[in-house]
Amino acid sequence: MQVETLPSVPQLDKKQYLRVATIANKTALRYLYIGTDTNSLLVLGSSFHAGYTAETFEAAKKLLRQHTKEIDVFIIDVSYNEKELKDFHIFLANRNLLSIPVIYNDCHMTHEQALRQNDMIDDVIDLCNWQYDFASKISFLRKTKEYGFTTNTSDLKVKPSNSTGKRAFDIIIASILLILLLPVFLIIALAIRLESKGPIFYNAKRAGRGFRIFRFYKFRTMEVNADKKIEALAHLNQYSGSAQGAKFFKLSNDPRITKVGRFLRNTSLDELPQLFNVLKGDMSLVGNRPLPLYEAATLTTNEFVERFMAPAGITGLWQIKKRGRAEMSIDERISLDISYARKYNLLYDFWIMANTPRALFQKTDV
Image (cartoon, rainbow, N blue to C red; front, top):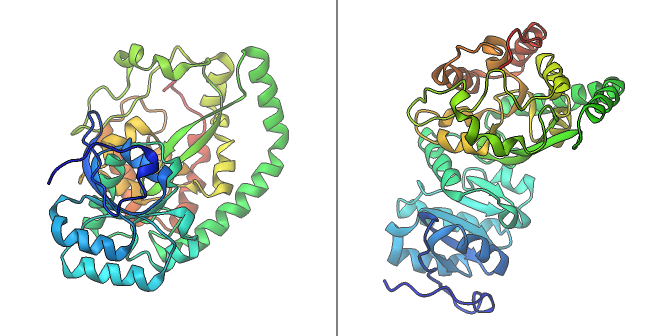
């Protein structure tokens, strides 16, 4: 099939189908976009080598009859219509295409609608604010479909029987803690400001359950622009031995940490702002550690994908088992994450929280 040159933006919604030009340094995967939104098409055009667009589900079916083997992900960006979505799902089933992930733009689908249709929708994302490579997301969704998990990450249920009680518990406890700890927040903020210039809080993108990207909050414990020094300090990485491509980055005696920051880290007080993440629904009180994007991208393989099926958490199995131990390997850490993802429930969370206080104070600077 002939590849067309990417047209100017005003032309994007004038053609029923559009083959986007191949451009270097993008994921080699191909998408089928169902919709007409210009901004969404710009995001996809900057993220993929190539793809197809169809204005409607019917147009998408017509295209798929010709190009089935060239599609790696379906991205739906039209108003939610339950009947049309079910008809499209049946069409995909009849053509053995259910292994291909289906992503819906959240501006057209509410949480309740996504929850009802989570057998047909693999993920709901804010397409125009998507700020990470689609290759990792699609790889994750493919692996979770192979495992047969529910993967919708719009705060939906991976384990329906546990989710409601866990969320209610998170909201109640996080709200109480934020009220009680307000004086501590103020004291820490003052100490950080007196020691060094820069913001009181640190925030960065993290990948949580279902590879959902969110803004993660902590008290700042490092000098400003510490993230830019990662490459120069790579030789000090605690996780120097990688496991099948997996990568973590953590330094022993990190030179970027301030004096106040070292105290906050060793007492775990730097984690307190994550209570806001819990209230927002980005995280849970107990779960697997949300990862920096460069680390998360290495864990979307068959061996590791299960760790993303559990909620992101402030504390978790890794923290109470291994936190502060410099000899921990990548394999051990991932194994603990997967173990939690396989058997987490509210009672298990209570046990982890009961064992968390003894892990709050580290004996080593790692």
